[in-house]
Length: 164
Image (cartoon, rainbow, N blue to C red; front, side, top):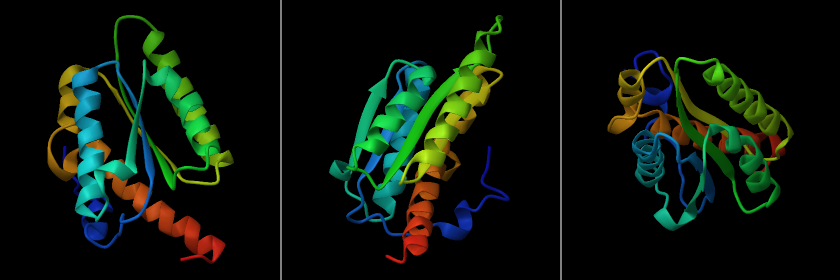
């Protein structure tokens, strides 16, 4: 897993998280992986000037619960962005498809209706090895990537409002 071809290298260091309030809504299912995604997001925010106390981590049982919680976080008016993090690993039943589809469609609906950026950092992998590869240390971590995208989108929203 690498950032080759990603916007991450171009944006690294060019964004400012200082003073921003971000909700990190993270599932507890596959906790070792989602914990690493949360730490990646927090690391990206710190690297760009954010403070740990400005990143509220909100835990939910699984990826299914991410959209409804992201919606409530967005509605609260307390946050500049919402980052949804989770991990769904394919199993032997169609359950994987249902959870992935609803997490994706649900977060997309929240993103389209919210006044703040809502970022999708849900891993949907075929196996545990793929998930671990996307939840490693540094900027290859998809939580890190989602946090950098959140910072960029905050700037985009502010420029569209004429408040940047």
